[in-house]
Amino acid sequence: MPTTDPPRSLNFIEQIIENDNTSGKHDGRVHTRFPPEPNGYLHIGHAKSFCLNFGLAEKYGGKCNLRFDDTNPTKEEEEYVESIQEDVRWLGFDWEDRLLFASDYFEQMYEFAVELVKQGKAYVCDLDAEQTREFRGSLTAPGKDSPYRDRTVEENLDLFTRMRKGEFPDGSRTLRAKIDMASPNVNLRDPVVYRILHATHHRTADAWCIYPMYDWAHGLEDSIERITHSICTLEFENHRPLYDWFLDQLGVYHPQQIEFARLNLTYTVMSKRKLLRLVEQGHVDGWDDPRLPTIGGLRRRGYTPETIREFCDRIGVNKFNSTVEIALLEHCVRADLNKRSPRVMGVLRPLKVVIDNYPEDQIEQLDAVNNPEDPDAGTRQVPFTRELYIERDDFMEDPPKKFFRLTPGREVRLRYAYFVTCVDVVKDEATGEVVELHCTYDPATRGGDSPDGRKVKATIHWVSATQSIPAEIRLYDHLFTKEFPEEAEEGEDFMANLNPASLERLTDCRVEPSLAGAEPGARYQLERQGYFCVDPDSTSESLVLNRTASLRDTWAKIQKAQQNKPKQKQPRRKK
Ligand code: ATP
Ligand code: MG
Image (spheres, rainbow, N blue to C red):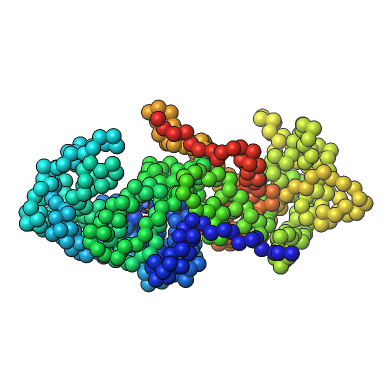
């Protein structure tokens, strides 16, 4: 019987690469790049992109560069350069000695621009930003030629040189490619190539006061690095003619741009600009808030690199924009953590239980299985004492019919311990709230086994009141209440759909003593409560756990519903 899944079919990019390898288009080379702009932290959408780029290089024995597309000095910071490297490395990818910066090519890019001017294919334009926009026309109306379009090569060279020298104020002039103001593709209507910006760059400091625009810079970066397949997201599809035009005019090495659909996830937003707003306005606790879809957030939440890679593999690569259910991501993390997480017991909302017939000072060490999914994981000992804590909602004084857990007069199993029967309920006189239970235990049921075939309908978890350790536990819900947060009412935006209850902090939790000294990043399954990860806020005195995922997997249900539906769900289009 086959033990592995059948190999999946090639995605459309792999098909292109295999065809190119057959035809010898790039001499059989595969050289990709991941080109983040260092203006924010990476999110799982970026992971889709870099898993693809590094993955293709790995698969075809090629190379993948990590290249910072740092052409916009006002939004970029060293902090982001560091975090991006950390995140890519954490996911297990290696750029070897190819850590590259677009800013290292500024001189070359300038020389190429001078070349374009000399060819009569670029000119210095004195229209300001607003005029430039007006002249550009619209999707339905052609643009108008700039009055500066016919400057001589000499005049353009002189002005461009002086732009570089810093003789003109910001926004007063641009260098524009001379293509076609009537082109049906707006990107080809004399696009701006350089703008004047007196700003300090995180790497080149004040060496430059003109900066290249994305479309100009990006193709040149790819060409300089001799990238074979330049993979980007679909919104750049109608920039491709411009990408090609620039490289063709210059007659330089010409990579192939290929577009694929970006990743969107339900119940979250995925643009750095929007994530930055959430961070800066304090709606979340920094870029690595466990509710964010950032790599740092997912890491802090307890996701593993393997989960993220598996998820990116499962969603695949295609040409149509769609939104992936966040439940699929959660399904992947559960499947992964189920295999690798040691099981422990912890009580989130403790209710005290006194075992009346248990000796006062006795501490018994009971064997508990570490991971039923992993026979090598062995067992550990959990201390049992007269005073315990159980989960508040595992007891009901006046239960409905289908409640099988603890209630007055009923016997249940304490996991790995004993059968206990509730004999008394102590309440707060003022509020009527249940504050303590009294139970008796049956010593013959040690380990949780029934000696006489007697059955109980529920097994509940517990910790010793005196031997357990305190913990803070943070429970997370989706950051937004809506499946498609961008769908907001008139006059509002995605911020209006923030979930006010996305974080619940439980500060009175108790966990078994084996968690003492657990290091940040350590992962556990708290039996019946989900998968948890030790937060970096933890100290040796106070343990803080993040819930990575509950145990309830909604993916199978969603998948079934989707199979019965003709089409994948899409957000409503804005009119
Ligand atoms: P954002 O829209 O989130 O601000 P960006 O596209 O501006 O992202 P870049 O730093 O330019 O961010 O992106 C680096 C690479 O990651 C690009 O090749 C981009 O196409 C890709 N990328 C960004 N977001 C996604 C996404 N949601 N799915 C797939 N790839 C993405
Ligand atoms: Mg971008």
